[in-house]
Amino acid sequence: MFDLLTSREEAVLSSVIHHYIATARLVSSRIIAKKYGLNLSSATIRNVMADLEEAGYLTHPHTSAGRVPTSKGYRLYVNNLMRVEKLTSRVKRKIRENVDTFDKNVDFLLAKTSQILGVISSQLGVVIGPSLDDAIFDKISLIDVAHDKLLIVLSLRTGIIKSVIVEIFSHFRPSELEETSRVLNERLSGLPVQTIRETINERMHDVSYGNPEIIRLFIDSAYTFFQFDEKKIYVGGTKNIVEQPEFNAQEKLRNIIELIEKKDIVVHLLNQRPDSDGIEIKIGDENNADLCKTFSIVSTKFSIGKHDGALGIIGPMRMWYPKMVPLVDYTAEVINRVLN
Image (cartoon, rainbow, N blue to C red; front, side, top):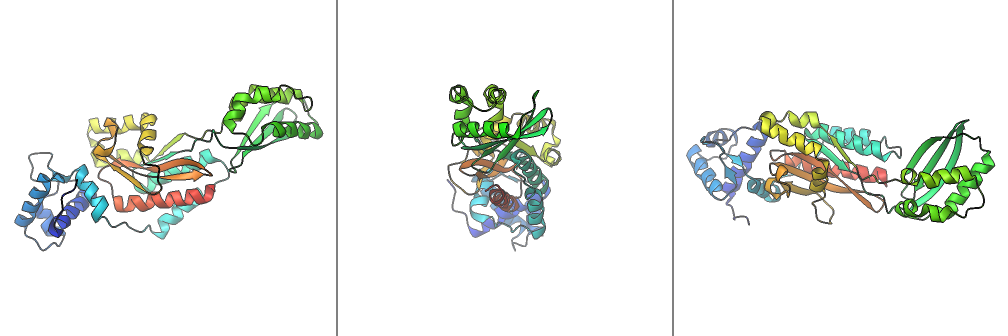
């Protein structure tokens, strides 16, 4: 529960948060009086800051009189006081230039997206690909590309394409490849890829035409060929975040390195959102994992057809939320447009 703050308290809290985000230094009443034009004396501001601390919005980590925001203070700021910035045309263009190179290679696109989020935000850019196990398989194409190589092109109804080159020890006539792809498509098209992986042996065991060597190859390699599960995690911006002042201390640096290495925790962080669209912000103590109590996560969904993934930014609570929110939102907008 939030207390009902006066306009004076809101102005002081906003000023403290702005100054701390900008400098990463403890904030004194003297600094606020000098730099933020509140028309209040240092003594008055000091009293207001004391009241905000008593209410749980500020704290002072040392014996110094300087204060920093708490999770509760950031939450009030994000909910009630923050003015979201507009992204510059330069930043938008940078996002589009990196994302619009998409050529059906989802893996490359999502990795690129995490990198551009990390670079622009100076935090960790994180993308989680959607699970495509229940995506509907569309068709197979078989192409003889060399005397000992066969190109297999598999596509989903979402438009995602996967190409696999396999070595073969026979030369196939074009009509033979066409006939084999036809029987594979007749038996498998329209099924979820997970179903194909689990049942392809039964579905293909009585096939009486097409090349038996290729048919056997598909049966034996189904868990490779029909693995479209893109639920991977992509992290970019590691170099940027370790340079943040919060991680000068060895223990806190270890925390961020551990977070990057424990990708299951990162997946959990970005998936701890309700089933709704829009931006989700989790601040400090609001995160379920103990390792993440000093971090904030700004995230949203994107989709490939009906399949949801997530993208966002992970960083210290001292992040510039007015910029992070539109950055995540616009990146998801571009990703959705390109993928769909």
